[in-house]
Every structure is written in structure tokens, then in C-alpha cells.
Length: 390
Ligand SMILES: *Cc1c(COP(=O)(O)O)cnc(C)c1O
Image (tube, rainbow, N blue to C red; front, side):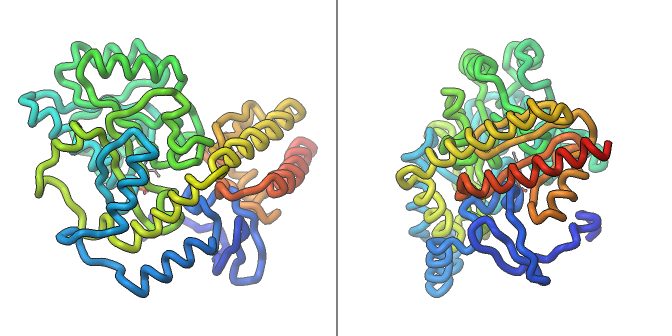
């Protein structure tokens, strides 16, 4: 259907590391990873092994039966994060739907009939289903699909007074939902003092804290989970994008007492937690938790952001460089993000754009310093050209 408009005129056929090759044999360096998905790059030997072996044994059997890799994945995530129990699904939107259902049923079962509203942030992005659109704080996505799911209130992020006002006595609020670092709207991080106060407010008013880590979770920001930057643990978090390294899988993690609010039959999924997706995700998570992986991501992120900030000092067309780890936004003083994206494409580099002023970089986490150096040379040349032709 006509949902994606005119595609970029290229068709990739294969890749290796951070390089992609198209039907014409042209090679591109990927600094977008298919929207933060291809965390281990392309043709990663361990992923190939896992997927081929699992395909030869068992792809699917449904959740009526035990799935070994599902249990192993849950155990690994439980050890590495603040959550105790997991539900597996197939996308970020489904993971957020699940989190919303869990928060609502949690209070319904505790005897509250009106504690079902969820406070979300302006400029957030939580998915494309009617309910996750209702949670998303961007009218351009949601308005065409009214009527929306009731029960969502939006407040500006990093504005504690607005949040406190919306919460009131808390009797009608079941959850506060936020991306610790907003991705889709241009790499905007929550401030640590704000997040700490949000957590305190949740505890004081008996409200669940849900972090949407679909984009910022799993090593992307130089920590395994983005919440580690803020020293605040959510009650529920959601994952997807990078979890399967390119194989679709989403996950919802929750603290034990919250997770236990679901009874058998109240939620489910045909494909969710299937052997192929879970075995693949186990390999992705093992690789990320292997010695030095996250540290290297953090180090490369610091290096990359450092070099970009130097460019921002030199070229005042760049207003700001922001982000954490390998989740990076470059904001310009003019609406040139699409021009930058197209020019970088012509030069053999894939980057993203958020709105018309922000270049979004989400490279595979296996990127190395030399890749970053090469990118900087090409990008700096482009900045010079843009200024000279202005
Ligand atoms: C991409 C994204 C989603 C939606 O994930 P899908 O897999 O496209 O449904 C939700 N939340 C955040 C923060 C995202 O970046």
C-alpha cells in the first residue's frame, strides 16, 4: 500500500559487517542499521549459525508448549536487567500494547476501577497500532485515525510541574510511559534529575513506571539498558528493534509483582516467542554481554560524538550534536536534514533524518573507529560544500 511513498532508489541484496551491496554492485556504509535494528551488522557469523541451525530443527510450535530458547532468553534478560518476567511478541508496537494492558489490569485486579489513564510525553513515539498511536505524543501520526483509544494524557518531557499537575492525586493514573531517550523525534534525552523525580512521584502515588526502550535499549546508548544512565529502574520496560539483530522479536519485561497481574488467557501471541526469533535473540544478547562489547560501544560513541562536536564548533550550520553511545542526533540551524541524507546516500553512506533539521545516526554496534574516521571525512566535506553553496 502507499504507506512508504517513494523509496530511496536502491535495492540491497546482501551485506557484510557495516557494508551493504545493492543490485548494481554499489557498496554503502550503513550508519542507520535499518532503524537501529541490525545491531550486529550484516552476515554476522554467529547469527548465521544460529539461524541456519534453528531453521533446520524447528521454526515454530506455538505457546501451548515449552520453548527452550524462550526460557533461556528470559533468563539472560532477567540476569542482565531489572525485570523478573517476560512476554515475547513480534514488534515494538506489540510490546507497548502489552505493557499498556499489563499496567491497566494490574490496578483493575488490585480493586481500582478508575486507575487506567496513562501519562505519556509529547514528541514520543510508541508504535502504529491504534492504542500505541494514542500513546504517541505526535498528532501528525494519530489525528488521521481518530477516534483514538481513550486514557492517554500528554505532557512535555523534562517539565516536572506539568507532570505533577497531570498526575494530581494519582487515583486515576496507572502508569507513566516514556522513552528515556526519544529516538524518532530527534534524539532527545530525559534529564537525570527529572527521571529521578518521576520515579519518586510514581512511588509516592502508586503509579507504574514504563520505559519504552525499543530503540534506546540493548547496548545502543553504551549501556545494556538506557535506564542505567539514570540510575532509575522502571516497573515495566519494552524492547524490540535490535533484540533479534534483524529477525523480528519484541519483549516486555516486568517486576515479578506486576508481571503476575496477567492470568492465563488474558494476553497471548501466535508467533511471539517462537523458537527461531528467541534462539536468534539469545545469540544477540550473548554477543552484547560478551566481554568488552558494551564498553566498546560506549567508547566508540564517545569518540564519534566528540569528533562531531568538533565539527559543530567549526561549522555553525550545525546547531548541536547530542545523544548517548551510538544513538546520535545532529541538529542544524536550517532545514537541511533531508538534503544531508540524500547527499550522504550519493556518497555511499546511509543516515537517517528526524524531522527536517536533525540527522539521525544509529550505526550497527559493531562499528569500529576506522569506520567513524571515514564517515567524518566524507561528512565534513559535505558540510563544507553545503556552506560554500549556501
Ligand atoms: C520503533 C519504535 C517503536 C515501534 O516499534 P515497531 O517494531 O515498529 O512496532 C516503539 N517505540 C519506540 C521508541 C520506537 O523507536
